[in-house]
Amino acid sequence: QVQVVESGGGLVQAGGSLRLSCTASELTFDDYTMGWFRQAPGKEREGVSCISWSGHRTYYVDSVKGRFAISRDNAKNTLYLQMNSLKPEDTAMYYCAAARYDYCLGSWSDDGVDYWGKGTLVTISS
Image (cartoon, rainbow, N blue to C red; front, side):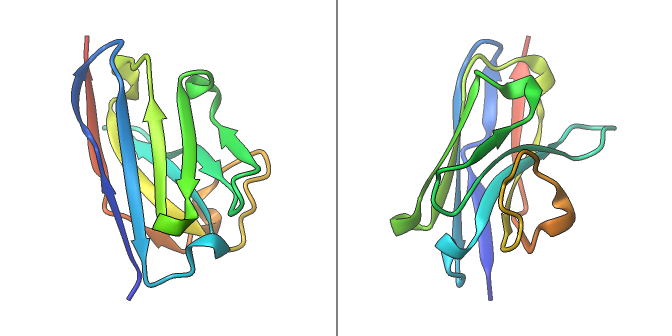
């Protein structure tokens, strides 16, 4: 049974940093584009960032460009999201996702997601 598990969320002050991690088991990790979604209270879920299986292609939603960096370690079946210069508007539940047939080509939609994690909460205080 595939398991996708996020970690690294927490409460930080605006301007601070967090690194989220996501491990996936029981799947061939490097067959999948991996990425992060987030959902703030009362808002729709949005695709934050994705990375292709090789790591050669990445995508970031405009609101996080220059502040967030996605990476992956296929040997460890682990995905990362380094989040710097955090803002209160980054407060959300962050979800890790795996998509076999989404190639991270300039967008990141939940339409192609095969597996989801349960989420990790990120709270940024002003």
